[in-house]
Length: 373
Image 1 (cartoon, one colour):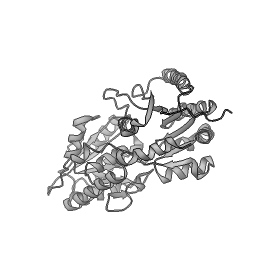
Image 2 (cartoon, rainbow, N blue to C red):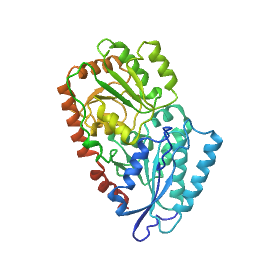
Image 3 (cartoon, rainbow, N blue to C red):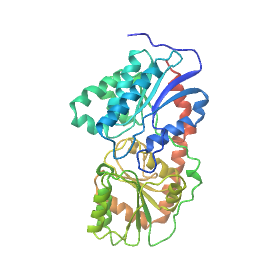
Image 4 (tube, rainbow, N blue to C red):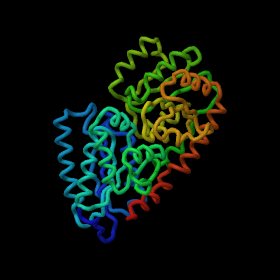
């Protein structure tokens, strides 16, 4: 295997991630914002990026033949880019499933040509891959062992990847998810005395995101929440089914399905919300949760992925167990009746995100990792 090649300055990295907007079909999300925020941060004053876009073409995903064709083209482009003598290495963002297979092959190619590789796995669904697939149980550890650095979003993810790879501690770096908070911190959220609250769900409408749990929790507490609005922003394979469930339970007057929201519309919805809910069964370190906290919203979230390492105590939000619809419902009722509590949680959450998750705090740490040999 060739020695790691280290070209002269400036620092030059292939950056594999999500960079392209795709109308409003929802084919972009937290990874897009993380990648774009990194490119627009002061880190780009020190690093010459060669972006390679791997955004999903459409949702629902295109046929497998189309996906394999696009992945093949990206692999060829990656090999060409990483083989350039002026390139130091690659920063590779990966999701789960087919994304991990494709990005894992990129890691192996980078290793073969002797370039430094930093892998950033960013999906909570990798846990399901490892449980269901013998191929992934063999492939993921191989990819980790051929990465020079595994960029983990939390200590819990570090421990998982360390356990399955057998790698020493120094091969891992824990860097939490980051945000450009400038627009969010200027929002003045509602925390007023009222008989009703606006509850915001923002994300994929998939079973693993806990959307059915939210419907059940609202149904359970319908009398106490009868004047409230549950604003659901997002799309996914469960959309039609969730709407039927809401209608069958007689909850249609409470639910407002908005589809995907971006830009000023998203900021307006965050400002109009009183409470943010994230009832997921699987998460990495959710961008939507951090956005809501930066916007000054009190949050209710489940103890999954890196979430407990964000909501480290009960002054920052309400942490419940995944699938506990009773706790979710009671938490919504509690916050509905306590505007002072909502205000305190929201302010504490905003201060926490500014201190630990703002891109201005994070980018120097990433620069240190990229510069290390």
